[in-house]
Length: 142
Image (cartoon, rainbow, N blue to C red):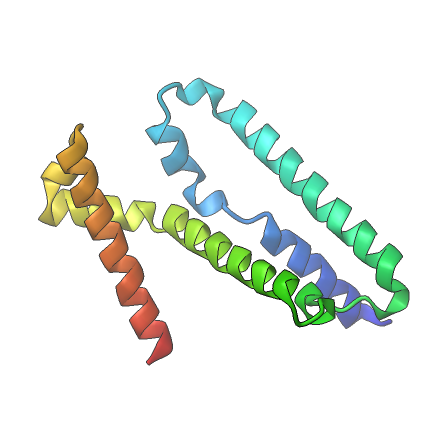
């Protein structure tokens, strides 16, 4: 195991904790922005606990043969399918959170009523964010 192996692991770990690019916007959107440090502390503690637990259990199960992608060691049955579905859901939620800044800018410019309160505004917001997700999916897969 050389420097590149360890630096790759460390960069993967750091990547798992990214999200700073949207933190100020999240704090601005909170009903009580002063609670933001508590929310960050709780979320990052939870992330660390989950990632550390998965890493330890994976190493205990696979030892030195632990793959970088844990989906590779799952049997080809419902467990692998379930993990794949959960990964898709995870990516969709992550993308939805990450696109909030751009969505807000688009709505402020093209559809300001989507930023109001009420069910109609929520449907308009849903339409804008869903259209953005579909557009990004098309661009990524063309």
